[in-house]
Amino acid sequence: MSLLINILLHGSIFAIILTVYLLIIMITFNPRIWGFSDYPKSITNSVPPQTKKEKKIGIVLSIPFFILGLGFPITLTILLKNEFGGDLDFLSAFFNIFGIFMFGNVADLVILDWLIVGTITPQFVIIPGTELMKNKEYKEFRVSHAKSHIWGTIFMALLSLLLALIVILI
Image 1 (cartoon, rainbow, N blue to C red):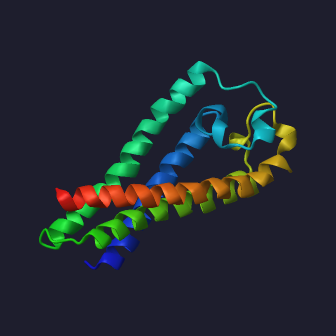
Image 2: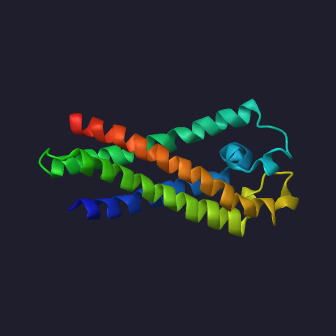
């Protein structure tokens, strides 16, 4: 399988899995648990801060996300290396990892952040006590969270460099 096809196929699978996982979390748990720190300050400052219990539950829910988020691109890059007879160059390893990461990043931004939270804004994304902010502050989520994704992209690029190096060395 070529590098581009690998990125397109596995990136799409990665985006679907992450989006479904996060959507299930969003629907199942209160946004004070899964997304409190992601919301604009205009929203979070209008309600009490997260409790210790809410933070702990959020950490527990994030563990499978981070295991999948790191494990999926690393595993698929190791498999790609094996498919290439153990001879995968650093740049190909980097692009494979980063490409897969970006599929998840873009799906999160477009589907979850822009479409669901910032445009549709169903009841399950509204922090209790901020219902009157639905038509203004929640719509501003689209812009504020896009900025977070830019910083996330930079972080993913740096992380991809490190992970590519590890995959090449093993």
